[in-house]
Image (cartoon, rainbow, N blue to C red; front, top):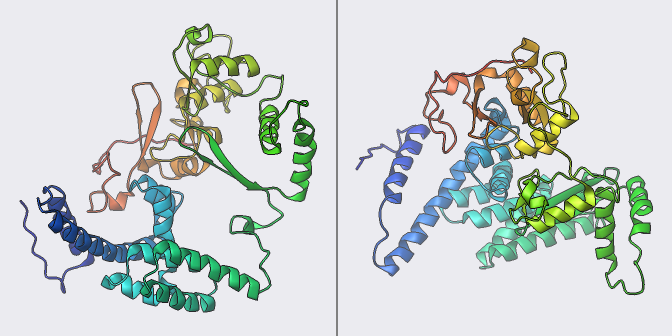
Length: 426
C-alpha cells in the first residue's frame, strides 16, 4: 500500500494529479463495502468528486485545444486524441470538448462545477445549449438554464429548454426557418453522414444542393417506380432499393468485394466478410457474388501485378484492392479513418529506395497521418502483426519521452526514449 502526503496549497498541479492517481489506484483495488446503504452514500460522494475533477479536466483539454498540442503528438484533432489515446467514446469526447470550449463563456457554470454544486451532466447540457449562441445570448441562456436546474428539472428537460431557447432566438432574429446545425454548413454544399447500427445496417442523413438533387431525382426516380400492381413497398423502400441498384452497378460488375473461401462460394457454410471486416452469412455472400460479381484478389505473383518494384511510384488498382482488404482502417493504431478513404503508403519510403511498390511493402494511412509520418519520422514505431499487416504506433514527441505524461496509450504504456524507429520519405 502506497502512502500519499501532499501539502495542497504548495503542491504543483502535476503533484496533485499524481497524488489523485495514486489514491484512485488504491480505491479501484478495494472491494465494495458489504453495506448497500454505505455504497449508496459512497457513490454519491465519489460522483460529486468526479464531477469536480471534470472541471479541471475541461481546463486541461481547453488549453490543449487552444494550442493545438494534440497535433504534435500525432493526432489530427482533439476528439481523435481523446478517442484514441484515452479510449473515450466519440460522444463523450465531443461532450468534454464542448465544455472545454464554452467554459470561459459560462462563469457561473464553471464556478458551480468546480465547487461541486453542479453536476457534470448539467454542465455539459448547458455548454451544448449555448455553443451556437453569441456572447450576449449565451449569458442570458446560462442564467435561464441554471434557474431550471435549481427548480429540479432533469438534464434531459434542461436540454429541451436549451433547444427551445435556440428556437426563440431564431424566431426573434427572423431565422426560424433556418436548417439545423448539420445543414448550417450552407445550402450550396451537399453532405451525407452515416451511422452504423448494432445489426450492421446504417442510418443515413444528408442534404443535397439543387444541382445534386436534380441528379438524384433524374437517376433514382425512374428506378423507384413501383415494379407492378403487386409491389407493396412504399416510396422510401423503393428509393433505397433504387439507390442500392445504382451503387451496385445494376447488371454490371460492381466494386463489391467478398472475401471468402472457395468452399463458401460452392455451397459451404463458412462465413465470409466484406473489406471493412463486417461478417456476412455464407448464403448472403453467394447472393452478392451472383449479383455483382467477385473481384479476384491475388496475394502473390500471378495474373495480377502486385509486385511493381522501384520503377512504379504509385500502387496499382489491384494492389489498392488487396490493401483495402488487409487494412479496414488507417495503419496508425487508434485511427478510425476507413481504409477505403486512406492513401497508399510506402512503409520504408519509396523516395529513399528502400520500399519498392510491392504489396508486402505497402500499407494504408489516412492523409493526415501520411503527412505526419513524413515530417515526424521519429514518432512512429512500425511493427507487423501475425497476419503480416503493418501497425504504426504513435510515440510521444522527443521532448516528452520519459516524462510523467510521456507514456503511450493504454495497452502500450511506457515506450522507452530509445525505442527504435524507422525513417522514410513519403
